[in-house]
Image (tube, rainbow, N blue to C red; front, side, top):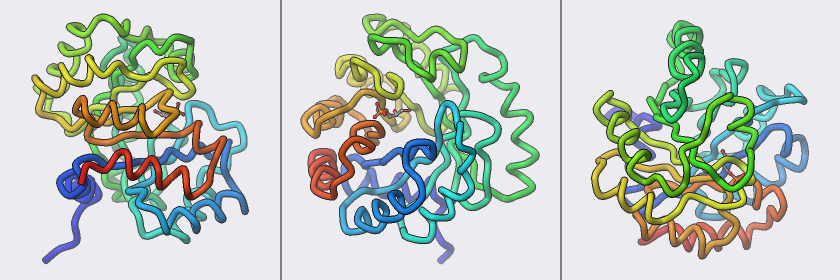
Length: 250
Ligand code: 1GP
């Protein structure tokens, strides 16, 4: 029997646990010995996988951060690229994002055309993911850096139409993103309507600050929950485990 692809590992986690818990590591915010200590201790929690990336990397420690994480974990390590500079064979896979809520051709197809030959050459697994930026109460780095307008949080029909377009285009995952540090996370009503009509697994992130808030997204139909900022602020194993317990339905 061959080894499972990272995408199939994610599907297995969703199948076995109801919903998966993904911790976002922004290389600018967590690196060096702090990161090493964090990953070592997180090994003893039920975190399911790591996303690595950021809208803007000022410190250029991307490769080094991936190396540290891979050295100390057996969990999947997946690039969540904020730019073309965030591509590396040290990860297990990359979310091959297309920013379908926006109308900026660079993020819809331009950057993908530049990255595709590189991904093929280094043999990195690419997971086709539709990225939907939803208004989160403040201008986030994702909104500013992508130069796209988020979908208004009350326009559930518009978000659903984008999700369905992503499904019909053959994407494998959808990422409902309020933006890192968003004031308001993705509304549960939006998650439940998309979940009811669209068969793709939903990654939900941006502005989730408590295990209860995470659980609310899971109940609405999220397949994966992402937290970044709150864990940068409080990286204790007890908070990680509380999130994992709230997110795992079984
Ligand atoms: C950002 O969805 C992620 O891309 C995580 O957001 O930092 O607000 O948890 P937070």
